[in-house]
Amino acid sequence: MEKILSQFNIDAMVFGAIVASVILAFVLVVVIFSVRYKGQYEKIADLGERLKEREEKILLLEESLREVQILNATQLQEIGQYQDLEARYKAEKAKVEEQLALAKERIDTQREKIADLEAKRAELEAHLHNTRDNLAKANEEIENVRKRNEFWVEQLSELRTKYEAIKSKLRKYEG
Image (spheres, rainbow, N blue to C red):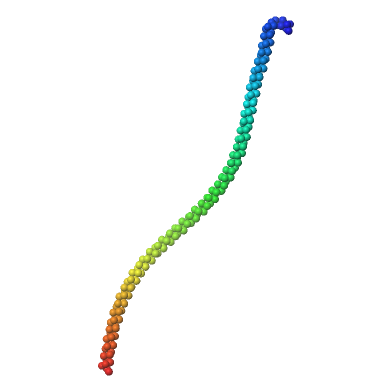
């Protein structure tokens, strides 16, 4: 080694310093790479943990997605049922509206009939009133006629009596 040192004219101390610097540089490079490797390893471990967390989250999300899909399917079934109910409701509503329209027509017809009957009733009441008035007049007339008849019956009775008296007188005179 001394030959090498003498050939390059390097002192042992300088050579030692160079070797120490190289070793120190090598150690420093090893330390730097170790620190970097350790940092990278920690990052890899951290990323691994994050990856596991993300995978767990993904699993949870997939499970949630399945539940949501099941819920969605259930909701779609319910929506279908509601749509069926709505269709039935609309059909029933249309029937009821049709029946209501028919009922209104019948009511209008019945109202017209009632109005006609009311008019006829009023006419019949007026006719009845006139008939009662006429009956009262007829009864009054009958009463007057009866009184006249009674008067004439009395007159006839008196005439008969007189006739019978005259007839009896005539028989007396004749006989």
